[in-house]
Amino acid sequence: MESDKRSVSFRLNRRGESNNQNTLAKDEEGSFLFAGRLPQDYPMKIVWKRGFIRLVLVAGILWMLLILIVLLFHVWSCQTSFAFFSALCNREGKVFVALDTMGFVQSQHRCPIPVANDPDRVVIPHGRTPDEIVKNLTYITEDEFANNGSQSSPLFGGHQNWSEREESFKLKPTMEVHCGFMRNGGAEMDPADVEYVKKCQFVVASGIFDKYDVPHQPSNISDRSKKLFCFLMVLDEVSLNFIKENVTTRKDSDGGLWVGVWRLILLKHQPYDEPRRNGKVPKILTHRLFPQAQYSIWIDGKMELIVDPLLILERYLWRGKHTYAIAQHKFHKSIYEEADANKRRKRYARPLIDLHMKIYRYEGMEPWSLKKSTISDVPEGAIIIREHTLLNNLFSCLWFNEVHLFTPRDQLSFGYVVYRLGGSFKFHMFPNCEYNSLFVLHQHNREHSSRVEWVKSLNEFKGNGSSMKESKGGFGLWTPYPGNLDSVVLPKVVRTSKAG
Image 1 (cartoon, helix red, strand yellow):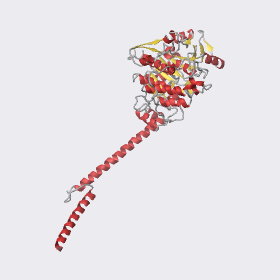
Image 2 (cartoon, one colour):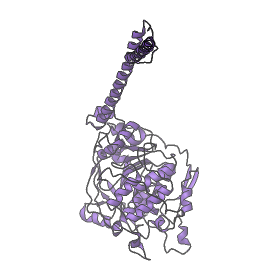
Image 3 (tube, one colour):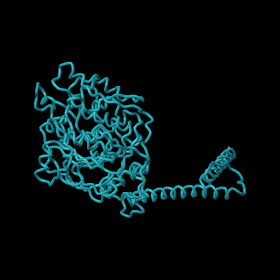
Image 4 (cartoon, rainbow, N blue to C red):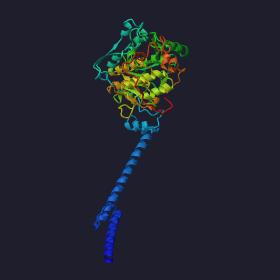
């Protein structure tokens, strides 16, 4: 009996020792092994595996550090004042756009512009850029709604209905669209000015309305550009009288009125109630006012041009083979961000801005994101550089039609028209810091203010003949929209800047 117990105990002890050996083998060698004799080269395999893992980890860390150093150098080069290093920064590339979106790049106010050194050496391209998409473009000039007797006088932008608007976005070789300048709609030029602008192939255009500004003389203009360009300042009667009283003017033998290099172009019978909306006529429809122009540079009336216009065309159009260039907005990339900023800064009636954006949202306009092919949907509209190709002229017409139909805040409509043309309209959007290096910004003579900017509810517009309504603009906002906007929810906006 006692021997049987010893036998059982011995077997248990042997089993326990065996288990301990197996456990020890697993713990010390880092893997599951069978008990028994190990291969002679086993320690070398363990060393090799551990070394390989360490090598991979070190290589991964070094690779991440390298990427971090490159990104930091990219951020620094985009913000340094050294011209050589700042030239290495591709502000239009996906890397810069992504870093800017995430807030890693601090926007500069001004940055160097790599313009050519000598305007006299700039080679002007021969001929015009071929029109490959739109080959024939005509404009509707009769306001059909007015002709049926239900309207006493035609609207400058016409009574475009919703189906006509939808059709205008479908690109075809031959197109006929609304583009302002309806017969008897206003904005007529003096015959002497009409004759003068016929000779203008290269144009620098600006505008002053409701006496906000006085003409600012451009500087650093070469003799070649003075001979090549027409400097045309478009204005209304109120601004013309204000300039005559406060600035020295001269009259030439043909009856033209001048302030320095600027030829003053009077638009009679203002087409809109709102001076801001009147200012969009020369800004967007430059090709209609000056039909002989091949190239134009638009600048707002508060800007003083400090770069030769020939160098601007070479830098932003000819060098990159572009036909349309516009600056990027400093703060906003999405039209919904810009709309929010317009509301809180009381740039126009809040409920009408919301209605404008709801229509765009209903029609599929997405907030800007890195997935989009453009670096932003919101331009800085104070400068537009363009060759007057048929596609560019069509884009200008469609952009103006949105301003005529909805709100005068043209920055809300630019990206929408780009979206509706489905990528066919190509343009160059350059950094805002370069835009600030092209001009000196002057203050307006006074702040603009109108009752419509303070409206908080659509109820304030009710009633026939309401003084709160614009009678000649925003026509689309007072016509029943064919879609159901009740369920439309505007995208949430994160306010990343107090400005804008």
